[in-house]
Structures are given as C-alpha cells and as structure tokens.
Length: 456
Image 1 (cartoon, helix red, strand yellow):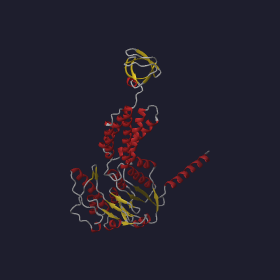
Image 2 (tube, one colour):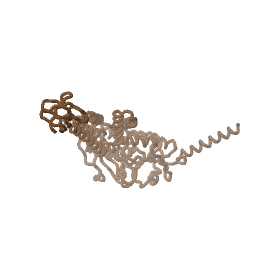
Image 3 (cartoon, helix red, strand yellow):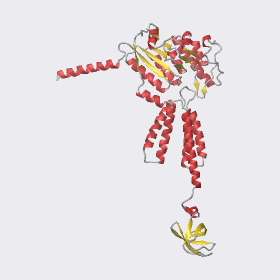
Image 4 (spheres, one colour):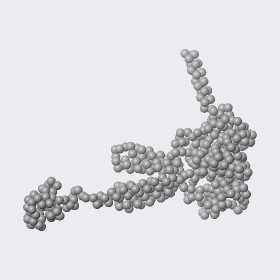
C-alpha cells in the first residue's frame, strides 16, 4: 500500500509538471500578442484585461497589443490604458497590418504603450472626444503651429466649443493625452493637436514627428527594432531583449466573444425587439411557451447589453412608446391613428437609441429601415383587413336578414300574411303587393318574427 501511495504521489507530481509546461508557452521567454480589431467597447476592455492576466501568469516577457480600430467608448479606452499602465510587463502597441488604423481611442492607447510602432500604409489620430449630441467641434490652438509634414493629413480647425460641457470634455481629453505623452516622452504638441483639431498622421509622418518610435513591417521586425531599448515599467527601468523570441497569440475567451456579439449595437437592438415580440405573442397566444421563453431570454440579454452601451434614454423611451402604440393598433384598430404614431416614434427611437457619434457604436440604418418598412406593411395589412371587414357581407344579425331572399310557400294578397321559406326556415311574411305561390321575394323589413317582403 505504501508503494502504491508513493507511485500515486509521483504520478500526480508528473501530471502537475506536464500541465504547467502546457499552460506556460512562454516558459522559455515568449512574447504575448493581443489583437484589438474593431471598435473599443466593454467586450474589448474585458478581453484585454483577461489576456493580460493570462500572459502574466504564463510568464510572457512582453506584450504586443496589435491595433486596428476606428475608436470607441471613452470608459472602455480608459480601462485598457489603466491595465497597460499597471502591467508589470512592457507593452508594445503596434498598428497592423497594412491599411489598419488607430483612430480616436486607439491614439490614446498608442501613447500609453512603452513602445509604439506602426506598419507601413497605416495611420493614427483623429482623437477628438465625442459628446452625446455628436462630434464636438474642436479648434486648433493658436499656440501650436501645424507641422509642415502634417499639412495634408491634419484636419481643418473647427470652431470653439459652444458650451461649458463641451469645454470640460475637451480639456479633460487634452490633459489625459498630454499626461500619456509626457510619461512616454513623445510629441506632446501633436497629441494636443490630435484632440483639438482631429489631426491624423501616416506611419512615416508619425515616426518623423516622434509620435511613434519606429515603423515595422511585421511582428518579427517590431521585436528586432525594439530589442535593446530601455523602457520604464512602473518604477523600474528595463532593457528589452526581444529579438528572435516566439510570439504566442491570446485569442478572446468564449465569454469575451459572446460579450462582443451582444454588445454590437445592432445585435442588442434586435435582441430587444425579438424579446418584446416574443412576449407579445405569448400574451396573445397563451400556452405556446416557446415565444415567451425565447422572448424573455432575448429581452434580458438585450437589456444587459444596453446597460453596457452608450444608450440614450430618450431614444429608449421613444422606442418603447412606438412598440406600445403598434401593439395597441394591432389589438384595438383605430384606423391608423395609433399605428402611424407608433411607426414614427419607433423610427425616431431607433435612430436616437445609440450614441451615434462614437465610431462603431450605432445601429445599422438598413436594419432600422427594414424593420420600419415591415411595421408599415403590417399596419397597412391591418387597416386593409379592417376596411374589408366593414365592406364585407354580413352573415348574421338584423342587417344580414334584410339582404336575404326567399320563396313564397303560397299566394300572398295585399294586407294579408303568408309563409315563405328563407334559408330553409319558414317565416311569416307580409307584402304591399299581391304575389303568387313560388314567387321569389326580397326581405325589406323585419318586426320580430314577421317579415315584410317585395318582389325580388
């Protein structure tokens, strides 16, 4: 028994060692690569935080943060930069591949990295903050002269911000990017210009103006050029030894991918609508269960996504009002009064729902147009059915009886009563004209069980 216990302990130790070697791809000194491709939002911030933790646990000697982004949400950007500044591992921000960009929030991330590089045919800049009302106009400061090399790429200066709130947002963004530029020893003047005037630079221009450290064609060249550089990580100063090291990619986890899908504004919008429609179908057709269950899940997931996104509450209220009016029109038709108002409120709410000034965070206009056209088609169908029902022949009631025909069972004199067969039933009838037996008659009036008839 003692021997078996010894074997079990040795086996467990060997298994733990094997697991550690599998889990630690950077045990011999590797570089972790994290790819940010697309708008920067809650999913991207969580992905970066998770990947940084995994890379640190695996013993990576450096992190390459590869960027291709149009920008995104300020809160998510600040979370990513805070993680970069707190990282005990040096971070190399790299805009790649060719044709990629680090616009808006991506420019701030480039300034926060210990080493900043770009691939050929890439660009960065346009870091003007965006307010809820759209793009905030930002002027180019008079004290800053526009560099000659940026003449073709710097955006024309805009007018002064019109209100105090815009000024606060602008000044906060300028102070933030200036602090990052001073921390990393990069071009402070151009950083402010990128915020005030939405200036942009190509890779070669950025390298000449010391906005980035160098231009690298690929990751191998990036590591080779960064090799030997002295960088500051927290309170320490390190010399990078990266040339020839293996690169290990850290893909998003299943949770990160799911969060990235549902926080897409168009997907969140559709989940919200599917949830409302499912609950409506369950309420009008109880006992089916599937629409109610699916609708409840979609509604909760959509609401979770909305609380992570820059949602306009006015747009959300208009959207809810529009859906409510359309449902009311379907349940109690009002010849279009509620339906038309519902379509208008629905379209306005859909357009205003998301913070449309933030790059990559807007509901697809084609989706809104398609749903609006579908709502109009549904409303038109309901109105057509209502009008057709008003014009349709009635099959019961007093009015339906006055449109029927019958056959006399015997001769009928003026002022006397007789009998006629109407729809297989025998009715007492009276006429203002004499009619022979078997004559076809039309019902013109009814009083109780007595019918007044005339020749058909």
